[in-house]
Image (cartoon, rainbow, N blue to C red; front, side, top):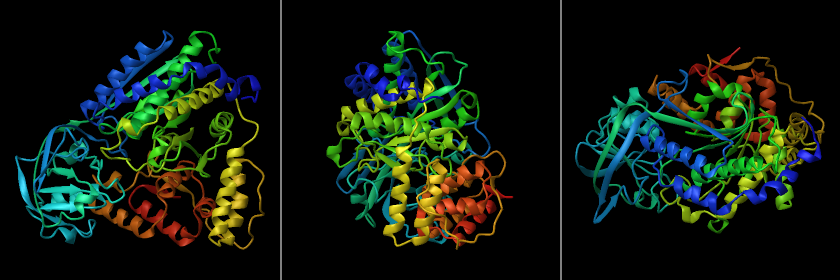
Length: 572
């Protein structure tokens, strides 16, 4: 790697900006939103096949593609994969109002079994969805569930409910939320009641009201999990990749037709610039990978990806208009538990040239960058959060600003070109921003110990000069190493053990809810220290620096112990 200015991202910005098309990126997004892209469904495979044709039609002759058609029977034993599922029709009548699937594509919970004709009855609200006693008198009834939807659905089915209605206060109150049950093939023969979703505004007053619903869907067999790969250069040569998840229900414009369309646009721009000799073909192979989120990336990293992808630029929600109260796309910086930051700093350098200042936040769990980090590949997330229409049927193309797609594609293309040519930044302004932000957070909380820890350990992890000296009054006695049991690479959460034992999954969910620990630490950062087999005491110091007083030594040890008890971790 070199910091040669001739292969810096700002040089590539100038060369490639005329190849990045705002209108084409928006057309691509609208094409993707035409498909109901649920994991395991034929709609996702149809979308992948159409996008492969589209890339070959729109791009020059130097592009190669391959579509890997994985199924729900090909994953590692620790990864639950979704059942094959397709929805045809759904109707729900509440009072004088009727709701239909064609108008509200997210009104059916993904992977829901069909109903046997019409189901009618008053709605009963479940108070504590994780308490089996809450379901003692629900046989033949329609249940309203507000949280822990996936586990609660399984409990409701076991106790003989006739159907469930799922809602979420955190989603747009007038929109139907997208909620996936993620049943496996084996579970689909065990849990058989239909699940629909309803907007929070309707759910608030629905208890006791008569509801009539009907659902027509097909379920059973291994789900379809297509992974589309396109590349420029030698198929066998490793290199950086652009990645985005293609899945999610129709329309799914910002999540994640925006990330998919921006990554496609970045890739097409690079291919055209190389084909016309405006930019030299890099020594490393540049790839575009479109996946079912998490599942497709894990399947790839368990196979061909492992030897071919050295780092990944993950584009998630990047297109929402700021007129909807959404922030512009940010770089989510690598976590202290997996601190490689050359890709992040390269993107930040391009961002600073284009925008005049960087947009950087600390790591957030929840997309395909987590998989690459778990397989010890450098990866960053580009994302907008929060989005008021996230995971609802209102997430449509009319909420998208094509300029955001263009800007993200331009930054992504210049970054991936710089890295493929071997560029490495000389300075790390992103690391300084993150370290100072975390120190400021601890100071505002009145957390003197956290401030000292953050000022020393966070910069140290990112390879920059510490701002403070390490505290001398923190005495931790544990050289125990954290590692995964078996070949597991990610914690994934309670649902990953539900097929094996629903009781244990519920116990784990209850524990995590009571602990109130940050999900980015639980599912992301603990995963990254486990694959690296880091000591408990050292990792606690990092997390105490970042997450503050909420994470105590006792809480951390208890969390690791229950994850060991559930067969996820081993404490060596």
